[in-house]
Length: 251
Ligand SMILES: [Zn+2]
Image 1 (tube, protein in one colour):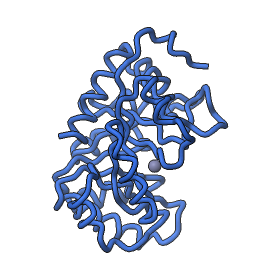
Image 2: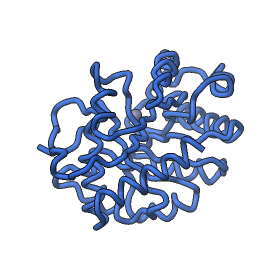
Image 3: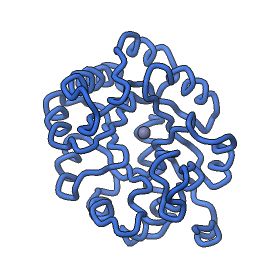
């Protein structure tokens, strides 16, 4: 079990990806008490837009609007909702080879990347077993906005390729899992100015809570693991990841 006394004073953290609308009651209060001062809450389908916008009424919550490859709802009204509302990013959008309708996924991904670019908003990207296609899409569209690779699952070798394309790398609970080698290796390869952390709660629980739904209050465990991987102290990881996230989402 990871305890706050292990890390001394509470660090100021920024959770760049948390499905707070699917977390248990009190999750936000617990997160704030654990030092998580801001969270970005992405949407999955159109049916979650109103809820994430409502959650962003809290000074601790920022929201993103988009269509996840799992939903593939039509994109009508997305640009208007982004321009007229309080969303700070487009997301989550992405490519996932485990899911059906691959061609439609690519069409929708590309269209949303263009909308984000037109609106000047950063993008939250979900990518599972599709890094080849993602690199190709990013190269084609060349969006001038920050691209956040949420729960980064690519290799260390791909890090410079993505960095050149304007990507940020967000690490989730998977990086804390014992036996995981690819995640830590990639995490060690990311330039400090492109490093972010997230919980993806209620998914991808960190090692000490595997098997139960994750919570944003557990972000310190992920920050601590990233600090160990990169050979720096927790305060340094908190400072750099929070500054990066503020630059991306609060500019
Ligand atoms: Zn997500």
